[in-house]
Length: 307
Image (cartoon, rainbow, N blue to C red; front, side):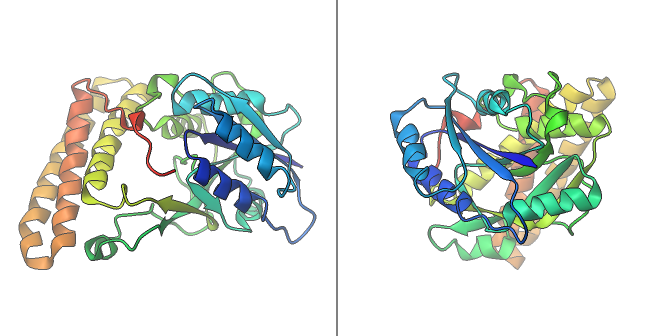
């Protein structure tokens, strides 16, 4: 079995070095698969190339360095897919601001085999550089929802996912390059594959740690992310199902979120700061949806957090 681990990186030398070190520590109970790491540098920097060269001394897997000069995550991810050798069985994705637990890849492969899955979505847990505010711990605002292993889901984020390689050899199975700086191209791709009948399951034991710098552990970033999620939700939904009914349903959903957020703000003055923040997040998500329905695209990835 051959597995390619794809990493898109952009001006995060410390994060990339930390991630490659964690990939070098992957463990397998039985014989490991043939693993190759493909690093796509979206900044085309000599620093990232040097980090890959240094990592080859300590990481037991081959590391291939590739440059993609066009700025944007989907460009880098598609360049990674182009670099995957034809004999590859599975393609895994992980981000350059994360680290993999030692059994990360083994758990992804185990769940894939157990459920005959086409895509496996792994768990992502937050790792804080500094202790987060008390209200964020109460509200559990950082990190993604987690499900029991084997749960069927309808999309997967490529900050922790495994794809059957044969599926990605289809020229239509590519990340949407119209979303270069918007974000959400992984949601678009996985949801489109799910619509075609491919099976996506969740692996709760396949853990990637998301290292959150102080610039992300704040209310401002949370609100920006909620706005972007709402904005992306519209782009993906309308792109995959371009009907009037889709827009109407999104409008209704946005109005409900506004109402829900307003209610949470009202009760938040009695129940605590975390409830106020929860209300604001609902409102910003709804605002992002309404902006998306108006044709506004929020380009969150104009900025880079962390190093």
